Every structure is written in C-alpha cells, then in structure tokens.
Image (cartoon, rainbow, N blue to C red):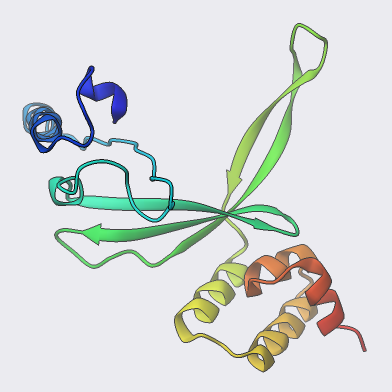
Length: 173
C-alpha cells in the first residue's frame, strides 16, 4: 500500500482517499478484485495509517505469525467482510524448503518459505478450541485423541495451542 501512495502520507485522510479512489477505478474498469497489502503498526493489532483505511475496503484479512515449539504458525482472520459472513479463522504452518539445484553465489542452497494448510483434524481442533474456549482437561483429551490418530507431537501442539514439551507431558502414561 505504501508504494501506491507515491510519496503521499498514509496518515492523511486525503492521500488515502486518493489511493482508494484509484483502487475503485481499477476495480470498476477491469471488473476485478484489487488487493492492497499493508502492515500493522507497532502494536501489531491493526493496520498503520489513517483511520479511514478500514472504511475504504470491502474485505480485510489479518495475518498474524505466532511462534510455536514447532516453528511459526500463521493465523489468518477476517476482521471486515462488507457483504457477507466473516470467514472463520484459518490456521497455517510454515516450512523452509530447499530448492534443489539452485545455489547462491556462495554455493549455499537457496530456499523458499512454504505456507501449508494443516491436516483437517488439526484445523478442526484449533477452531473448536478457539471458538469454544476448551478448558485444560478438554485440551488434554483432544491431544490424546489426535495422538491416537497418529499425529506428531508438533502437530498436536499446533492443534491445541501448546508447545511440544507440554503435549509430551500431557500424554505420558
């Protein structure tokens, strides 16, 4: 979004209004979706810039990274949905994957960050836990159920929102 301002000020209602007018013009002219990527402010809970930004968009998604014992998990939420029902939370995982045959100038293998959708059981468990606010006993029971289904401790940890060590302690006989 910042580069679309072309020297403008993201804190200016007038400048942001120009950006949103241009986006609507593109949408109407080409009959397509126009997506702007922006970042959060210092608190990490809302977009930086002028308060008119949420009003200027029809749909808003918020991607938040969370450190886990198994790496970085991503939580995709939908705080604004103008003409419809908000999407449920979507949980994703990340994995750094080497690119075979591609090396940098130092001879090191190049890599790419891959975003993966977790297995269906894990997604259901996370949504259920978040939506219903399961208590610790419920989380332990869910962990045991997921272990019986063959999930790894890392996957179970992501599913129930706990680190691998905690899950391991819960599942000790």
